[in-house]
Image (cartoon, rainbow, N blue to C red):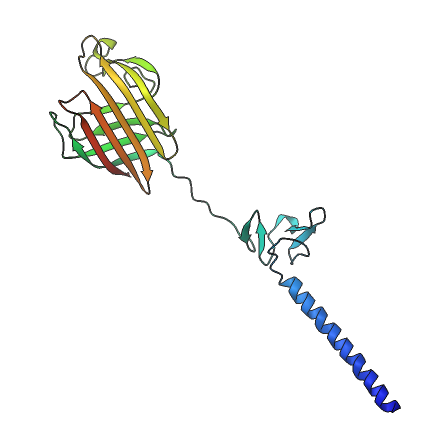
Length: 231
């Protein structure tokens, strides 16, 4: 009886030791491999516990091991987020557009070139067939992008206000992915032409979708639409 009791106690002691050791191993494994889906302490290797918030932060500013959540996003060891540059209008765009130009040369298709400067503003446009091109800017021979201004004629012809236009901008809107410009141009002393012109563009995937219209230069309204590619 005494022998059996002693053996029983010895077996119980060994069982408790083995059970405790197994629990420690399981606990250590859980901590080491803890997914940290909530980002709270205890932390995996390479991360330290920030006591005031009870959150795991990278040790010495470096990345940790295992998975973690930062600002709502899943990450990993040395994880980085690659953000491609935001799409912009800046550049030279060219492409085929469908043109309706009653009473004028051009159409049913034409090539249109649009230049957007480094600030995302319209700098120039021109058609290959339809006789219309225009530069924009602060110079006295260019149409304004806002406000009202008397524009001189081109330097190759009559470089004075008498050969130019009185231009009034009605719409001027420029964003990172679209623009719209509309204006009225009234010829001055020598120039008799009078017209209203609109050009607008919207980024569409890798293209610039263009809508153009002119009322006054031809016997009917001129309309051009198409998608341009960046040169």
